Amino acid sequence: MAALALCASLTGCAGGGKEDVSTALGVMRKYNKAQPQDIDGSYRSYYEVFVYSFYDSDGDGVGDLKGLTQSLDYINDGDPSTDTDLGCTGIWLMPIMPSPSYHKYDVTNYMDIDPQYGSMEDFREFLEAAHQRGIHVIIDFVMNHTSSGHPWFQEASGYLRTLEKGEDPDPEACPYVDYYNFSREPSTCQLEGTEWYYEAPFWSGMPDLNLNSEAVRAELEEIVSFWLDLGVDGFRLDAAKEFVSGATEANIEILTWFNDMVKAKKSDAFIVAEVWTDLSTYSQYYASGVSCFNFSFGNSEGVIPNVVKHVSGADASSYGKAIMKLQDALSAYNPDYIDAPFYTNHDMGRAAGHYFNEYSAHQTKMAQALNLLMSGSSFLYYGEELGMKGSGKDENKRAPMYWSDSPDCAGLCDGPADMEDFDMKYPSFEEQNADGDSIFWFVAQAVRLRNAYPAIARGAAVFEEGLSNDGVCVLRKSWNGEEVLLAFNISETPRSVDLSGVTVSGGAPEIGGVLVTSPEEPSLKDGTLSLPLYSVAVLVCGS
Image (tube, rainbow, N blue to C red; front, side, top):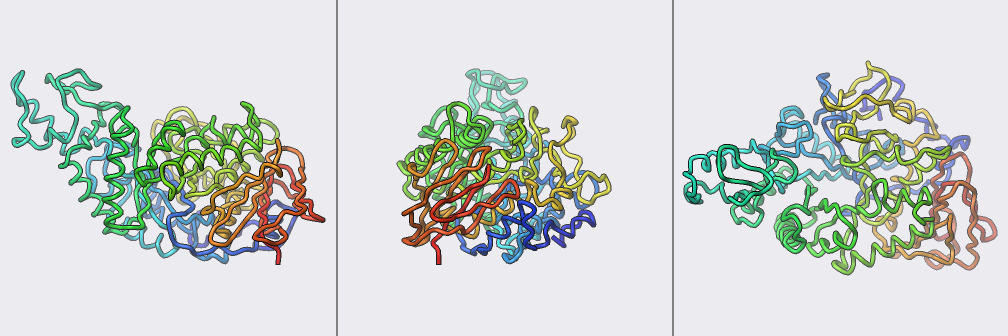
């Protein structure tokens, strides 16, 4: 992490690569010898970044693209032989386009960079530096709505104010009146000084676009071409469930059009949509060809936290059963689906707030393993690898990246102006980097295993129910001739699994990688796999 110019103490990382099994990191390094494989494609480990709060390069308190470029070695240093970075192979940038708000989900210009974040040249330099490290970059594309300050809306609303009462608008006189959903019938917002209403379910400053308009679609296609020509690798689509609120079929049609349009320009572009609803509904959206975030596993009441805490009737086997249910639901609409598992994001309370007992640090780590070892393209929200806190108002969930406790540390951001004051539960990166038992090192090793064994991300899972119980879940994954067995101990006590007669890729299993939440070693002896509390073993074919 030499390029990450934070504080002097960050230049030395815990363990220094030595096999010191007195820490969890030492145990993991002892077993995790497999090198990450450079396999291009849509199966990646994405890191979600809120630029505003990540790394400030110029001292104004606001994160920026230059700062993100300077901190890329933290996310991935581009050298697979090192394990001192997170190892993420993708970045999702929350909105970077000009906007009047701190969060920038109300866009005023779709083909520029918000001045708070820098210039278009800064973005090009960031993109080049990311690609040099093998990192794909997708950007937030907010096409459900614009800002009320967008020129399209300004033109439309200005024209409507010129009309006499009862006079119908003429699209030839002002084409932009068809860009939005204006009506005389009462809707969510009234255009001040007129008889006209417009749809804006989020708030009056975010008027919904009319995505059935061919003119709007032509505008969006031009915008897509602009960003693809710059070199972006795909898009995250905000609020896809609200394109036409309450109309699943209409939304799927819009997503299908968008997916086909983008893929015609860049066949390997990755597109993931936010469809915040239940599995039975968002699985239908896979018929469009896009991926959708896996809302059934994440958040405070999803499969992952329930399984980790063993609440609501959930236990370790529930995780395996939920995986099988998920795969059946998604494949029913698209056999070539790519899931998008995540645990938390910018709209949710951070995961450190989910666990409160004496094993809370173990559980915080284990939850990340259950997310990062899922099939598909996984997503990790910035700071979750440190166990950052943040709940309540949105600003709290987008707090500054916790690089250090020192106010003199370079790169520190102020965070959103209306963020409340609160203390973090776990130490800063500066401290965790020097602690081999930290959350950071557990997450970094989880990503490393995901990258080292392609079957983890790409293989369909088979739940080995006969090997599983209330505390242990065993999954088998296969891809391109490679097979792995994942054994999760999701309990606060050591567990064992009888693997007598079990094969992996036709041979006797051996431990190919581990994740441990304490300096206790798993073992495989005489057909019995022994797992420490809250740990994972990756079993591969023995030599």
